[in-house]
Image 1 (cartoon, rainbow, N blue to C red):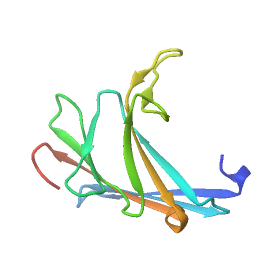
Image 2 (spheres, helix red, strand yellow; image 1 turned 30 degrees about the vertical axis):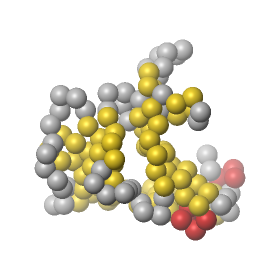
Image 3 (cartoon, rainbow, N blue to C red; image 1 turned 135 degrees about the vertical axis):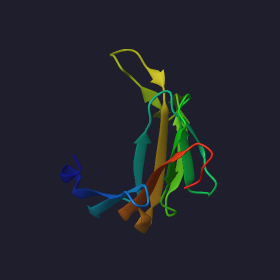
Image 4 (cartoon, rainbow, N blue to C red; image 1 turned 45 degrees about the horizontal axis):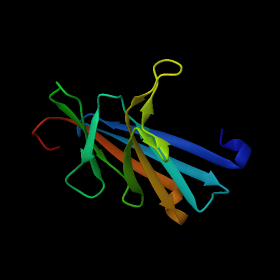
Length: 130
């Protein structure tokens, strides 16, 4: 996908069972533009809210006592979309010609920050901080 435009994307996943975390390290190399985007897509029944810190997000599902804590790279700006038409983001389609609003978290970085993004994810119980 990216090779045709002179860019290489490498994604490294690091799992830490002791800490109960997964770390995702995305690295871009090559001739980069001044900005880059990254997207995290969620199922239609997931609710996404801001977490306790500026770069934190919390994903929950009705009926579950689990929550997904996402700590996003501080060099990136993130915003949440659900059923947006401008830009067209935050949609899920199980079948052709049907769409359901769903959460998409979009990250945007400019200049040197666009070379990489580190995301930490932890699964915790509702009401308990990780």
